[in-house]
Amino acid sequence: MFYPDNSDLTVRITPFQAAKDGAPAPMEVMENAYIRTIPASAKLRDVNLHAPDGFAVRMYENTVEEEDKTVYVIYAVYYRAGELLSVSIWATDKMECEQTLDILRTIKK
Image (tube, rainbow, N blue to C red; front, side):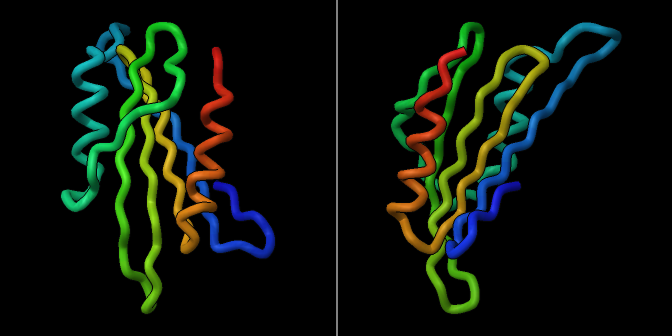
């Protein structure tokens, strides 16, 4: 998790691995497992992120109300057979979410 000073921004990055008897879980299993964690109110978003070789990328956005504040959320996932990297960006300033997303756009490998 990342919490910069003087900001409401929170970035959470979580890796997952799944295998059975040494064989990686199929890509579809990884994708479906992730999709089940996304709130029903989240909207699928155009993916403008580079997918490293062998990975697929999906992205969603959402807004939630917390303590009388609107919180913007971007969910992104990089996944392939047996591996998944979940990224969520939370902030009360939508532009701050988008600027943080720019960092993910620098991923090349």
